[in-house]
Image 1 (cartoon, rainbow, N blue to C red):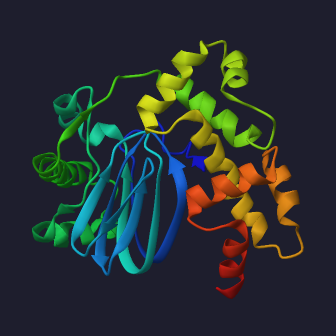
Image 2: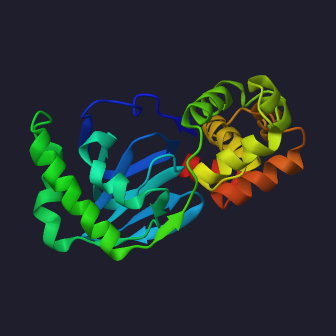
Length: 257
């Protein structure tokens, strides 16, 4: 999993693209993001919760949520944008966060499908469109309570994990590195992402393992050690839990495709 540093504290930053048969690895950032299914059906996973996204529906991804997409046979529009476009949205949700569920936006299809071609300098137009989608999203979903946490701390920790996940690290060692109480750090990470530290660390390691498994000559046991796991059984258990397949099954599937 990666932390997208380019999606952090921009000024009127808006990016949108049309994707076909798209896979987006687990990632996280400070911006809001939306995924709209133009054709077919997509699979969206947010903080460990997987849902199906039918045609003409949309999911709104709040900031600091671990999310990934699998869009085989589907056409989707993805948009990522800074918070200054939608200040009223954040004022309304306060310390809450909308539950991530598909939202019917069939009547807004023409607007959303045109996002990839929108001139990024048209800030007022973009803001109007995004606020319209915000209103629709909040009207069809419930707010989940969450506490505001130290986003700078979170950014530092996730950046640290992306560089050191292959090493022998744990929650206590990371907390000591940054001078924070272990329980506070655990609560902060889980509050923002819905994922515990051990799962977050495992996500980084498994994503790295998936890339190494495409190399047929590398022994699976060696990959487990290289990823930072101390035992092959732990590696196999985490891999199956996250991907739904054993490392051997994943390697076979990857070689066939």
